[in-house]
Image (cartoon, rainbow, N blue to C red):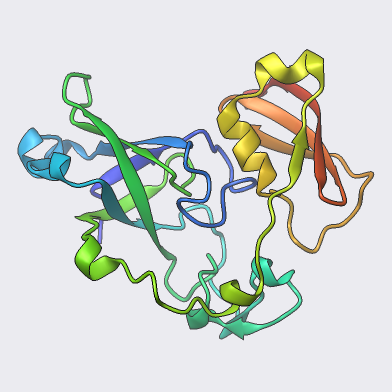
Length: 222
């Protein structure tokens, strides 16, 4: 397979990316089609849908799954489940599947058509291998069981931003921080974490169910 598009998002590293698509609904992203598909005819009719399925590659993962079990973050990283019973990024084949909402389609930029979407869980530069429309009558199953996600409810953190930093923090970033970007086995209230987001280096610490932003600075370019 070869990519048919590339995804662009505020996330320049894996750290901090929402663990599922749709959790942070305000996150913006753009789908840039490969040159051979950069034609309005390739997406003709897409405006009639609200959501898309993206099939993509975990391009930033250096290693495949080491075995047939993984430790889901939702379970605190201390319980093993079968790799095919989870959405762990460490898989025999590094393929991801995400449902994203169409915001709008730009037909006038130099890379048009550009598909602008909301709620994606993809890192900047992620290769996309296919795009398919989300069809509610076959794809939506609101009565379905959700396995361990039904019995392990996720509670967002309270995010505190000092007054002097509020102008540097967007509503999108607050939603991301509320999802607790830390590895789930970390629980050091004195540790300061750094997360790149939209060209900024965001520093924070977590105590209990409260995340406090301690600094925001321009991201240093390598």
